[in-house]
Length: 105
Length: 409
Ligand SMILES: Cc1cc2nc3c(=O)[nH]c(=O)nc-3n(C[C@H](O)[C@H](O)[C@H](O)COP(=O)(O)OP(=O)(O)OC[C@H]3O[C@@H](n4cnc5c(N)ncnc54)[C@H](O)[C@@H]3O)c2cc1C
Ligand code: FES
Image (cartoon, each protein chain N blue to C red):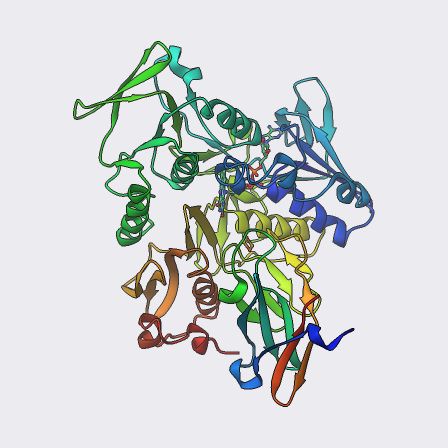
């Protein structure tokens, strides 16, 4: 994999624990999460309807959509609770010198 | 022991119950009897994305035929018209007889109908199921000025969808605010303003005296003698639990089928769940009947557990939503038992929430905002309600302070 695919999101202290930030890159939106065991990234829009997950609630390893309470596993993207039934795409994350990077394909 | 389990009503509560029974019991026969010629599907999009053509019928199924078959759940498209609880039998119109050891009744609710001259019965449309939604969608494509009778959730969602399809829409509501009295007047007014901004006409405090057919159009006479001309009429004036089948039986009915916190009815081995059940909620210490997506799902799951012998109390804090234009409205808990109301926010762009408190604890809340803006706070509110947290009212009323600070881990 080439180095260019890693995009800088921001510094590690820009996200509180058990929370997320929205990150827009070109015409796409992502959510980057800080969980107890590290940083994770998913698509930023719910797979049910076009709603930004940045306003959702992070609980343990799950993100709950603010519109209809569809729930996804943040680490695997798996849709866990209806009305969400399509999985959420996830992206690799790395931390380098207190900076967060996500790998977008 | 192998049991015959029958689920009467193939909607949301029914399918979730069936799958939950299978999770706990691999042997019993599970059969769903449903009068709609369709696998169980989601109703919320019927008044929204389905009318707007953003979702098709096949997008609405909860589970595919394969999932249901793989779990060895039988689905039969049949309408039941007689029940014999004593001999544990159900009878269908075509003379089929079904015997059960355990029965779950999940027959949902049905729309109230306007009492009008008989010759207009087929002219007024209602929305409850996929067939009706298909019909409405087809007919409105040729109509321009549409009247919705009833300013409840479903009527307003249809009004929002039809407005987005460039139709002129008039909503006539008998009460002095939209969405009934459980929604705070301030929130009802915010929603009303959004409808008006999009060109919908909202008429409050008016009753319909008479509807007259004029060629292909209609004239609606209101009780202030004003006349409305329209070319299509849809009524959404509330619903009643589907219990006609049980009216002359021993099953205890009172605004639906009366159940305890284990989804058990007054008859042994007979359970009820979803819209049709007036259930005892141990947290609120009273009976209630809810018509909501989350309730149908969770109540169905709870009934499934109890039928499979896993005794489980139903304690879910109520939650529902309504989507109209770019607004998302949410309601949690109960909003009619309170000694104090606290407001959070005053701008629909950031979300506005009203909390209903009793003895310094939240009993319920209602909020509205541009899509995505109230969901997180309403969800946290459900948790605070459930945990009976004594809340810091300063945090509740200040939108700059995060509500999750109030949740005790
Ligand atoms: C247009 C619309 C929009 C909605 N929008 C929202 C929303 O935005 N948010 C929200 O929270 N909730 C919403 N709801 C409510 C939610 O969909 C219902 O609460 C939920 O579907 C109830 O599930 P249920 O299983 O109890 O009943 P249902 O899903 O109604 O299923 C009952 C089934 O039983 C069948 N049946 C009845 N009698 C018999 C018989 N004798 N023999 C065989 N079959 C029978 C019926 O035909 C039906 O298929 C909406 C409802 C409608 C109609
Ligand atoms: S938009 Fe996310 S669950 Fe519906």
